[in-house]
Length: 386
Image (cartoon, rainbow, N blue to C red; front, side):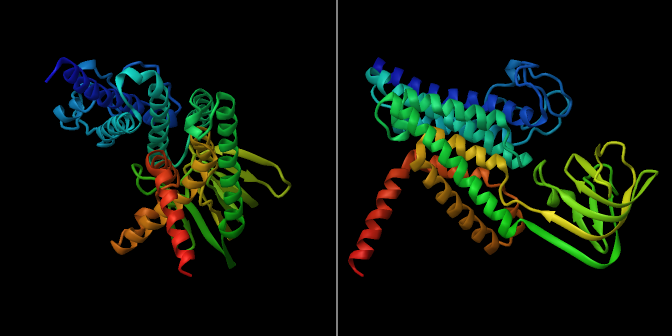
């Protein structure tokens, strides 16, 4: 092996390990951002259980999790397998992008900017995906910041959005972001009209309450003889349950003819005269009453998905947006079929739409044009034989 070949092999390993290192940082983002914590303070990662900061030699990507067997060295609590999975996934994606879009080292000034921009893109996709899976939300820190990054990236590297010239690259990225936003926003609004409400009406008032039989488990909502799990009602912070209450008791306070709007972390009580007040769930021990009508507004997608597709459009343009929305729908349908066949339909129903968007966007980055060309050729052959 020549010195050049040895250096080339070492650089290949370096790109994979650099991706794993970025994955380690993304784990910090995935854990802290939804909780409103700073990603810079404390600078070192800490155990989610005992909060002890982790020294550098116990925070080596991939290696440390394996050597510690997925446990904290201090309190021995389990560290989720998601940590090593994200590190491995980002490492593989970084290397795949380098292999697919890279070239000879002498031409790094040509292919390097594109590879760097795609590394940023997949990092945002991975962070958004795992936050959405764990918390059913896509934070603005990912979507809005990512959109700005995408506009700058496409202006710098117009080929990301199939454009020539820096000015056209920026305009095409802006068009992709706008299409992604308004296309999915329109779908969400139509979904609200068609499927957005589930209404239960009772001929006679029935008892309802929010109870927490086990302090270590989420509350449950009981309406008449039915019991609904908290996590089934509230996927996102914006999900709400509307209860028209004939009577309502909150701790030692009694009210009549009020509308109660329940959210994941708070609630709003509206009196008959229109006055309303917001309350936090903390401190509420008794929450019960009678009702004749319960409404569950349910959105198939949240506004975070709209912003996520806007970010995707900024990076890969309007063609990528159309492919992503179609590809995400196909992936969601295929997974639902597989889960129904295997008897796990309830599990698949809880997967948010963000991961499907991210997966379809990645497919576009690597094979989108080939898939579209294949489909066009297949269609033309079909029309030719008709």
